[in-house]
Image (cartoon, rainbow, N blue to C red; front, side):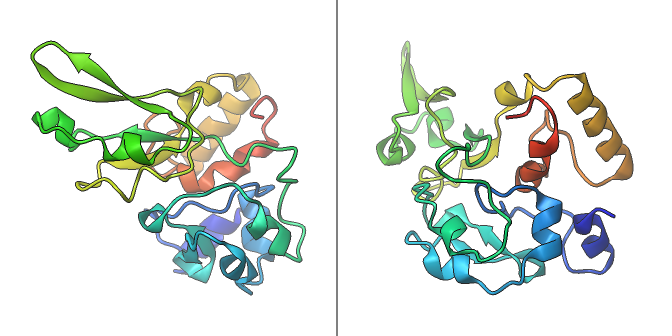
Length: 207
């Protein structure tokens, strides 16, 4: 049985969690089934962005910083929960700018651009208006460093739907099934899916 769904019924995990699980997880179900909640990964994270989240499982919180993809969390885990951080992508996540962004209110602010280590955020000039932010998808790693500097919390980390577009029909069927079961929300609307992403690694064509 899906561990997140079972834990949801037990009251361990909320149905609308904003937590993002750790990078390089083999699968979310394996994580929930076997994580001992020893918190070695929390102690190992040099950026201090891993904390105790829903169900007392470790999760990433970008409100306190970003991920450098150092792999220390995976290295610290004594269980077989992680893929190799040297040969696998950590996740398929990207930054997304919300309408509360000050630039949409004609207020000049480039805190996200200044904080992005991969130069994945640029501001497009607008004739007679304040430049608007744009995420360069090919460069965005979903590290989350842009989230906390934003004064109006307009940035969030979501699933890269461009990456999901390469999922074949088998993946599509798996997604429809999970929707029917109520265990995931739509991969196309960004809602409630980011923290569940590691489960998709078992779907052919996802990686």
